[in-house]
Image (cartoon, rainbow, N blue to C red; front, side, top):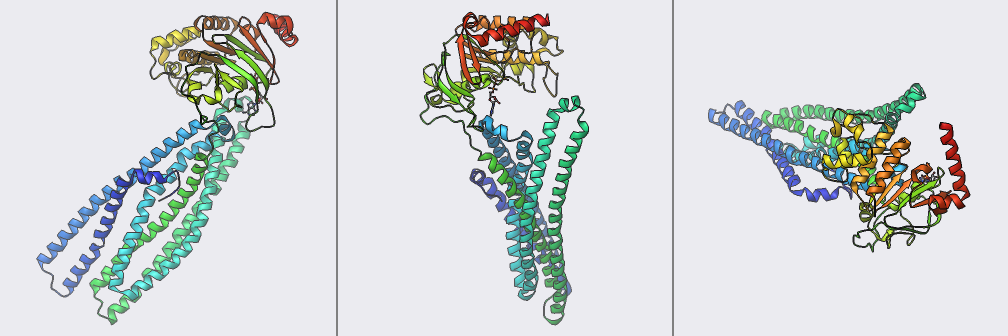
Length: 581
Ligand SMILES: Nc1ncnc2c1ncn2[C@@H]1O[C@H](COP(=O)(O)OP(=O)(O)OP(=O)(O)O)[C@@H](O)[C@H]1O
């Protein structure tokens, strides 16, 4: 059993199956205690030669019934308690994923993917164990332990006192060890997280490692993390073993005491051999609740440590949220206005990335964004996607302050080709059709042709059904870029943003794509970040950024006639072009 604000709701949601499971468990415990009594009865009747065939059959029938009830009961509590724990794990994983989708770019900058994966695998498993087997062990040990002790006390209060005193000592010692175990488990999980982080990053950067011939160095680093995890794991296991040793020692001491004391009272009093047998059987039945209690403590301490880690993740603040006075969904025409906008990234508030930007883009305009590397071009478009919060009245979509529009509303109206051209490990068709539930191949072909990638796709053996990524083909940088463009075009949104998205294609392909954009994006706003002036030369407007400042806005001819920085850029690129021949 484990409690916490992210878990408590599941006790209510799954109260019925949980209660049914616990009821089945308690009933099994209740009938189970009857077994020693039946054996004692048979033994005593045998000793006094009063056992008849009828008596024996009756006792055997009772035993059969008890075994049957226990069998059915055990299946029931497995289904209800363990099954519920699986549902809880499933639901919690779902809400963790939903939360992960809400968390902002700043969170993913701070937390590594490998570590987050540990929450979704190991920590959830520890919580499931605490919720399912943990709950079962707690109820089982408390209820079975109590009824066994009551029955043992009825048989011999003195002997029960002797049996229970070591158990109490054992409980106290175990409590100290369990506290230590919780700490060791946390250290083990942290070490595991570091190892997973490192592994994930090494796999992602395998080509860089190979290119720099750094396999040996990486192996050494990995060995360090692996050794650390091994040590932490062994330390944790040592404490687990210690607790088992303590329990075993105390139980054996108690068994020895009971045998000696039981034999003595059997000789000196009217305690019958049947009663002594029942007492021993009850005591052996008591071993399970004691073991279960210690296992419960171990499972729970792991569950609590894992829950704390998951809680930190679940409590991570979603910083980009809809404002309280959010407007109802608006159909946007594609007008954009920056109004003296200043922007700093949340993790570096002192460093101004965009400074006093004021510029307007009319609906349907095709706009190029140009600037040296690091001048703030990606930041400029990221703000349009509402990936970050901006000051009020600093950025407008049509006539609406972006901060007053719902995030969904904003993002629904924008199609985006990211700089890294991320594609999913799925078919090409599903990648192009990402904005729709199920895009027809015909439609995907239309957009692939516009992005000049159709001919490449049909060359693959499985065409549009070709799997991309780990399980499928590896695409070239240019192919990836063009599939990303097709995916964005297929969304057919009022605003389209291409963040340096034609850099990996040759000039001819680039020209073809831009021409297609001009044709199909009439009356829809298109923003293209580029490094090559040739990409944006013919656009309605070019926004020139430099060190986060808006240097100039105008057509190619206007900028060429008045802006020295632009003139210099044109001159340099013409020279490069000539050198490339
Ligand atoms: N998440 C972030 N946190 C802090 N600073 C950032 C973050 N992302 C970018 N920056 C900084 O903001 C500045 C502008 O970056 P941005 O990516 O917008 O430039 P860019 O013009 O698109 O560059 P490039 O042409 O190389 O893509 C850079 O100095 C960069 O280091």
